[in-house]
Image 1 (cartoon, rainbow, N blue to C red):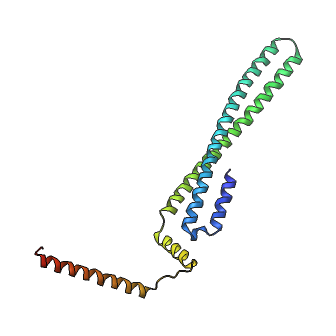
Image 2 (spheres, rainbow, N blue to C red; image 1 turned 90 degrees about the vertical axis):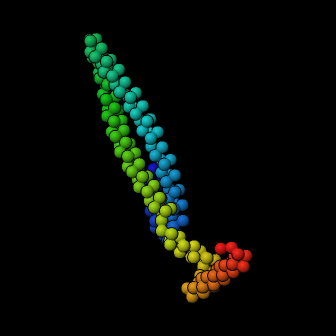
Image 3 (cartoon, rainbow, N blue to C red; image 1 turned 180 degrees about the vertical axis):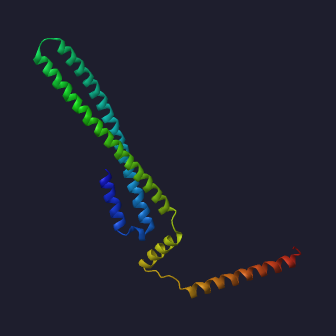
Length: 181
């Protein structure tokens, strides 16, 4: 699960998605959803292993009890069979205990990585607004539009201010004419 997720994140970073913050944030959200599903699957597997270990421990206790009972009977073949079953269950318990430890470590690692990804996703969505503006202008330019030059923008701002001051002056004149403050 972790390897597939890491490969997807590496591809997301490699494809230059950081130049388009929206695409990067969307890819990160998709990876987070996938990671959370993977963590749920890992938790289910952990619970299954715990159940299997509990069952195997019970079978070990039973096999050891049978081995003790067989030792009381003067039949060496029965004692040998009982000892082999006890040893088999003991080995299986050891393997399951190691498996459980590895699953817990892997789950802990995955949870830390998801926490890091969540923080990164929050930073990506609340990121720099100027990056979003630049990406929007790139989209406009790629669609055939053009960015107004600074001079044109200043002229438009000056014209807007002239109109606003004319409206304010006319409003003041009308208020004075009507006798209102």
